[in-house]
Length: 395
Image (cartoon, rainbow, N blue to C red; front, side, top):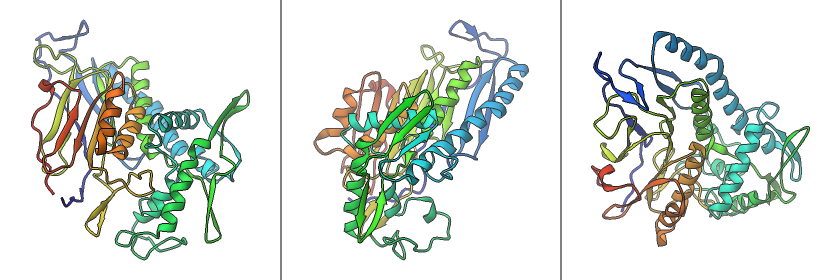
């Protein structure tokens, strides 16, 4: 079946009921939230996407306190996370960029945020047998999914570049070499002592193609937005804001509690839906709170060559994944982990039920997998009453 190129992101949408009528008490967790005010603060300055906090406050004074928190702590936290975790930062400023610039065997000092992020990546890499791998930076550049291809000023500058990387496929020797390089991620080690935190690049963390050496490099786009969402949610809770949610890019969210009036039995819950990227409407909806939500899929940064869609998630073979998974969504305790796991589930795919088998084994998670088949197949451990309006997937 021919696949469509999706022009917009598969967005996780939070559908919020109307606020309680004035004077009509409405309680969540023993608190009368009927007079709470919804406040949304948004920035487009980080992670190349919209980041927002959507919070219910009890008064104008709390609204002012939220605004101060936003400017004095949340925005600096987002800026620090992007600098630390982005491979595009200057090496003297960003931890991941510094690691990428290091020679094989070099011990690189990093900040605690990057240290914990790499530790999480190593954990998920092992848990998913390499299906989640942040060491695909070279492959992402090879296939034309890094920033230099997106600014409108691209010109071939590397040995493997093509005149038009979105209509010409790369040479197999580079595909194979960069896939082998990514497999060396499990040789990355972590060190911590009284002087700081360190990530050590493996001695064999390089490959050579036609006499040119390429060293192991990381791209943490698979968890970076989740890390940021977790941090912002923690700041809200630490400062007494208990009602609302955080969204980074619309695909990495952390839900607190909902202060809007809902129908009986759903007090405090958000009505979360994932949009069908083909036809509009929603694949599914789920009532939830106190949970992170993440969605991954072949829905952006994609192009078609020879009738096949190539997207930004790289498979174990060094090629953009084509496993039959339209989208993978998880509800769980950490946005960063949900980001990593959904990426891995896309790579695992539908063959032999590998992705659904993995999702089933995750504890404290709820999942939805949509496979692209003649009759779209949906695997989930959500109850039927929380699922409705499945959309047909058309080629």
